Length: 280
Image 1 (tube, rainbow, N blue to C red):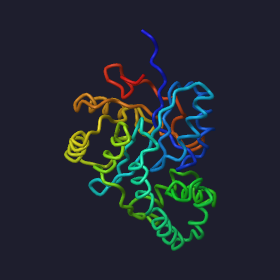
Image 2 (image 1 turned 90 degrees about the vertical axis):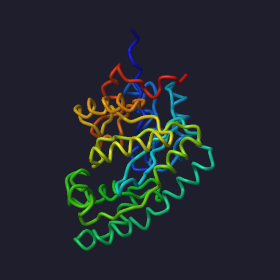
Image 3 (image 1 turned 30 degrees about the vertical axis):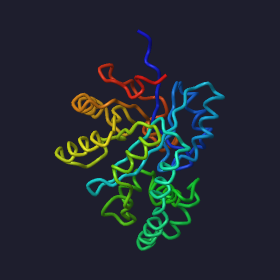
């Protein structure tokens, strides 16, 4: 049997909250042995053309993608779109609308951080944002690490940037129905990113999966940098139970911030049908 190709279908560039340019991200993926890469920046498709050109130059497969932020049951869920058409006007308009509230939220976060002795956080976060329209929590976290308040990004989130902590501000994202509709309308496949990260009860998870399937969603991430090995097994079972296609992606943001590097995850279990099963 031929070895499984190395697909990495979830990563981020500086166009959203990653550390590398789209070109440098593709170069790192190529160096790491990735055969097919998807760039899935948060709520933004502006890096896809540069990434596609770099992939063509290096001879690796490229999948245009996006990761859309969704509010479902008062929590944020991420929906990855794969094989989307970046020129689709409805997708572009939907992403623009989703991005529009980030500056307001960022200023609210900065005010809260200033109140606990971390001044200048909005401007500091902005200096880490390759795209000012996509200023987000990771940019604030990098600034706080830079100030010496915390040792790493993970500590910042735990102390300041999650619900109930100073520096957290809620954001109302797109609806699940809108996100799936935009992805499908752009010719893409909708996949629930890293389901193991969401704090839902079993009943809520069942409702999420059923609603997602009913809207035309097709897959979930099983092997992801955001899952533990136990969760690989758990979500392999979920994929089988619900008939989901399975995806694999590092969720890579940068060399010093990600749990796993591009292309370094174990393969999908061969009992699952991958999202790429019918791709040319």
